Image (cartoon, rainbow, N blue to C red):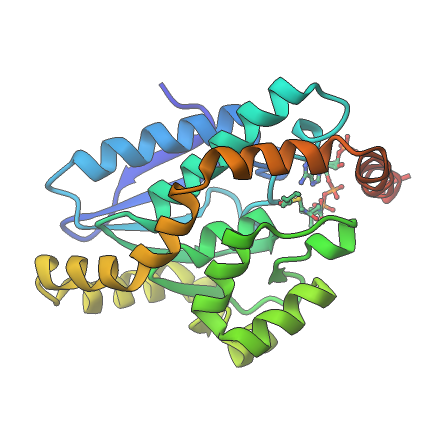
Length: 260
Ligand SMILES: CCCC/C=C\CC(=O)SCCNC(=O)CCNC(=O)[C@H](O)C(C)(C)COP(=O)(O)OP(=O)(O)OC[C@H]1O[C@@H](n2cnc3c(N)ncnc32)[C@H](O)[C@@H]1OP(=O)(O)O
């Protein structure tokens, strides 16, 4: 029984809706990552499901990215376990044979942006409070190569480099202009727009679409698969550095003080 991930049958045949529900901000904790992987595996094995709309149960925050508390003040074994789970989620999403449509109904920074970038299509609610991007440099950390590759595959090298160096969080209209999202719609039309685009993608025969998806994505996937363990060690080495720990603690404190 999953608590942090809700899977519902969609209103259209062959479509499931996967909803994030990990309060307060849908951060990708280890538990949430594991629940997501299990839910995605079940959906992948379900022949009746051809497409999945991915969204947050409550509008406001799509995903707050990786859970900073999993990356602060823990031991190397924990960091390694956590990073393996992050890799696993990306691999499941990026290689999914289903049509994935992200209905982005809230803030979508860093790991949240990455999850949405693995989808085949992104629709974002037109709310200026919502932003999307890989903002790692703003936290004093570096997006790993496979985060970078996923962004490059979506927006191209120049736009990705600029967005990554500056750690830009784009509001909807700008995200559309850069190509991080494919469509921006009024908030109340988000779910219907996602279902409508899903119907267009499902009109294509599955086998042809799936083989094309694999052809486009396999080189990027292979890069991580062939160096998974080295990537884990690289993450553990980086995150364990005092300077990185200090930067993350400072960022977390700023988030906590925001309210005070
Ligand atoms: C080498 C490393 C490579 C990998 C790199 C990292 C990828 C990542 O994903 S790092 C995480 C990046 N995420 C962010 O930068 C988002 C940070 N959060 C926010 O900007 C806001 O919280 C958000 C816009 C999502 C929501 O804003 P509010 O609705 O105003 O909520 P609060 O800011 O008050 O937050 C409530 C509560 O949640 C805690 N929080 C927020 N984000 C995270 C997070 N990513 N991980 C863990 N905890 C988080 C925040 O501190 C508050 O906690 P309390 O004060 O204890 O209630």
